[in-house]
Length: 545
Image 1 (spheres, rainbow, N blue to C red):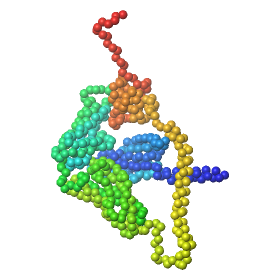
Image 2 (spheres, helix red, strand yellow):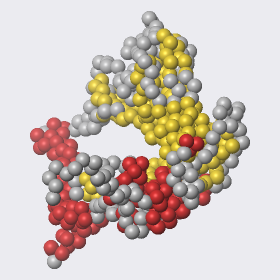
Image 3 (cartoon, one colour):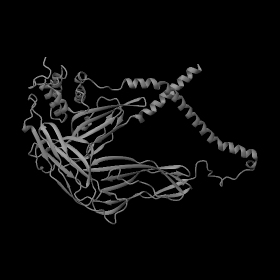
Image 4 (cartoon, rainbow, N blue to C red):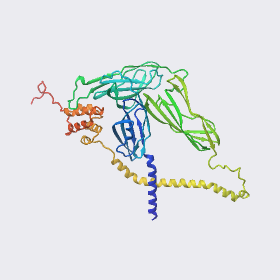
């Protein structure tokens, strides 16, 4: 009976722990691939969650946006014998108007996303080259940067015809470093009345010396995709090329009176995220600070710290950083938590953090500072507040009374120790239950791990990416290279299917039609090119029969 009761108590404790842990374990977040767009462009809304969902309800967005182009990517991981899966739902949004729009919150399973802000600018003037089928743009966010200032470079490939292959390059200039940032962004926009598919690629340019800096224009080379039933052609008119104009920058030297360390930015903002209202002697009061640097990466940011002062100990947690590309340049958000421990009671004034930086827009030195923290520090827990107000009685002076008072004062401490011991005991029980099931969970997780699909299995699914990987693996190629795969095939229909598969990746072909053609072309497996037989030699045989 006692064993049954103990088992039931253990199950109840495990159930309560799991129920309390479920809301904290679910991780759901939403973000936009761009913070501002022009009217007529499309922005991508991404929602990442670890909840087992098949789809997300995007209907609340239709009042403000045109919704289309939905997709989902799923990933699987196995860490320390525990499996987890993550899904990223993406949807294209085209605003119905201009101005500052709010992407409403969405219900994602048991979670709810945060509202997002999107700035929609009026459509710009017609761009040069808009009459061409393909043209390239290169934009920089600063034409007169300083040495070691991060310059955002945006390259856009605009095409109005289907493309079978795309090669987009931007060569680094002399006396500067160029680094690609993030993944490509694909969207559709209207330019001078024509609908273009746009591929946007971002870079970071850091000049290393002052003077004139020539940034070569981005270059595009590719081939036009043929019709659905047209044979694969290599005619000269299928080859396309375009290049953006060269950008000229004038790099300014570091000013003589600039603060050190050198930190050129467009803007720097500091704020308190968490401020305590009360503090106690010897106990930590938690403060959280956020810094938003417009025009710098996390590696360029300075360390955020409180200045040291007497009577106070300040312990800092490691900073947490987030990087993004907004308004054509990198932006970094740094958050850091501090524990402030006062050594004495009374009013406490703690000077706020200060960061010296250079305003690259106004060309002047600047300092971002937070106001001082004013805390009322109370005596520590267990200290007597009423010793002077209460007169001791004669009985209190006796040794027995003193011992009784000492036991009463120690009673709360003993109860706290008992609660801590009970908590440790519960954790040990749960750890024992977990260790008993860990081996079983590990084997189940390993059995659920994904494996490489064969070509026949991939063709039964509706995932063009899985078909591409299976096709390359079937040909024994070391990486995802569809062009090399097409060169090994001896069947024209299979080569045409691969060309359309590449076009579908760029949104230039109907995925359903391409899927049907792939299944028909590879229904009997891969057909490789036949090895040519050796031509007959013009010389007589060395050893005639």
